[in-house]
Amino acid sequence: KLRFEDENDFVVHTSMENIELTNIEKQGISNAFPEYGFIADKIFEVTGGLITLIIALIELLQDKNIESSSFLTNQEEIIHTFRQSNIEKVIFDGVETELREIISELSLLRRFDVKVLPRLLSSIRSNEDSEFGTIESLNLIDKLGPRVCWRKQGGYSLSEPLRLALTGFIRTERKELYLKINRIMVNLYRDLLVETYREPYLIELLYHSVNILPDKETSKIKDTLGKDLLTILDGDLTASFESVDFDSLQNVLKNDPDLREYISENVISYIRSQAKV
Image (tube, rainbow, N blue to C red; front, side, top):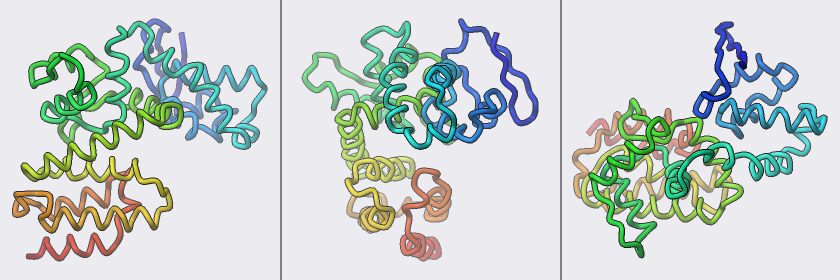
């Protein structure tokens, strides 16, 4: 048995056979491994909070006598070693081969639905005989079982622990796949917005756009993203501009954890002005 305590001293007991999707938050990591509390945020980022991966990373650090301070000095090399040895081995243990690549691809999406999923899978596998439609997508979601969850904001997502752990792994260890999927999603959402405006499609278009920008300097991302967003909102990419809820859009952009630092005040001011019209 493993014992973890969170910030409320709530004790979670779990057996080794049942921890594939079991995860704990940053405070739980600090409480369980106080000697590594200083790097709990990084441990959570690398493992997604999955207990099996946390244990593997802690064991690696302990075996090599790596303390928090030395981890921070050599974290790129340590994380690379850990990811190469553990991420796919742990996450894909017992998963049939045909599903492994699909899970990897879906981990790079924050949300998907039965309109997005068939287009994505068809784009990736354009040379294969298999056809992906709504029924096939629903069957796939059912087949993935607890690895997929319904988001309270609407749409499906890979379970957050798996998504976090795999996204970090693919971004650093499988860069070609990372860029390929993000580029596909940018074009896919652009096509969908031409057909009809839906706020989640616009938000996810911006998210995937950030991921493929070569320059990671915040100010330059702001400029590029701002131009793209204003182009869309000016009606170039959506046939139903009148259906944009600017109040809602402003709220979502200002609170999106992955986008808010890249949304300039000029963009927010424009959206506010449209909300008053």
